Image (tube, rainbow, N blue to C red; front, top):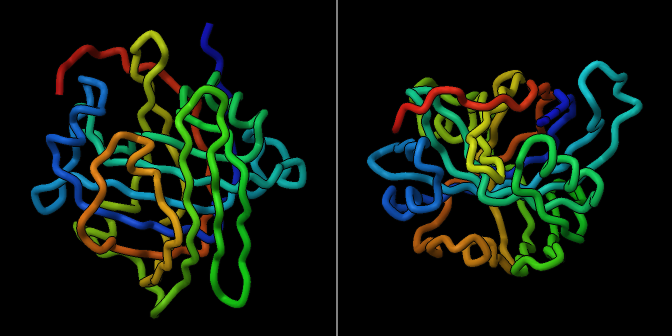
Length: 237
């Protein structure tokens, strides 16, 4: 029997680093029932480093939560017209949390080692995947806000890439599940990034981008999730 736990946490010091990737290339990596969500005629892939704080089952006090740095690679999809996120990978340092997320929410978490530091107005992040039996992946970069804060305008690229309230996952038996996510709208800043190493596209068998990324920084939001539930409909894309 599948049992999942609704969660609460804070997401802090996020970078949204976003690249256009052809819809056809992305569709080959998705479950058949999910369709690539396009903006300006193309799909998008994002790398998002941040730190989870106060991570805990929903309903428990914040002081019981744990800190969990994370680095994820995601794209944007729809199911039956409902927009959402599909993760290619999530790298995190907490081994028990990685195993729990894989078992209860079917999220493709991988055990990684690294560091996440906020120093002198910028974030320094290093992540090196060391998940047993999986291909290595590394990301080392610094990023920082570089402009005035804003909230994404309706129908803008910034809104498309950040304001998502559902994620889709696939269980080992092929069943697609969804989890709803609740938080306030993002406060965003234009951002800059300096990258020393990035093998995440290669590790996920995705084409390496040949354009400069769209970059946004956010100080973060507090978040609650629902349980992971199966999609009962068998409708195609």
